[in-house]
Image 1 (tube, rainbow, N blue to C red):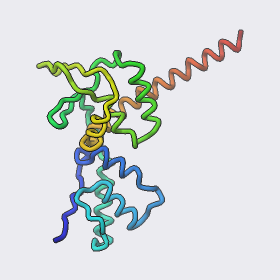
Image 2 (image 1 turned 30 degrees about the horizontal axis):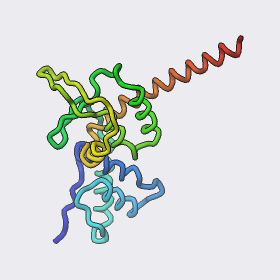
Image 3 (image 1 turned 135 degrees about the vertical axis):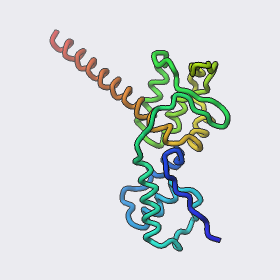
Image 4 (image 1 turned 180 degrees about the vertical axis):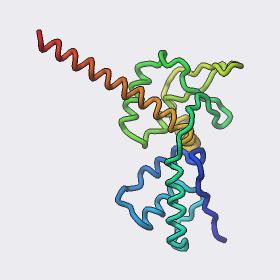
Length: 191
């Protein structure tokens, strides 16, 4: 009996784990090797051996998988639910600790292999859910179980908007820090 390969059609069908596997495909991989790698990384129910799949079908399926990665990014989701538990982004960013920012900067510098850890810094168990959509989150502490859950189940429609938002904050922070350092060096050299 032949397996039916499940090709994702939207970002909500691609987990962090699948995205990370996709990002690890070497740039040098081309042709059939690349198409097989893309399918195995992104699609579901892919058999180990794809020799029976015609080249054109393999190429078309891989193209569809890659096309999903370039879909328009939606709105940031402040609250999400995984395994019956609500997680939220800190609703008061001015209360983020230096440790949270430092972890985000360090993890962001390490790249896509750390997306699940970045998300566990950003999304934490939500507390005191209000009727008007207000909530609080638990104080930040590293939680490997949460990171593993996010890697296996959080999808890229959730990840991309929040990751881009916080990456822009970190870039702005780094640029402003560099400007301040530059001004300090200029003022101390003129003395």
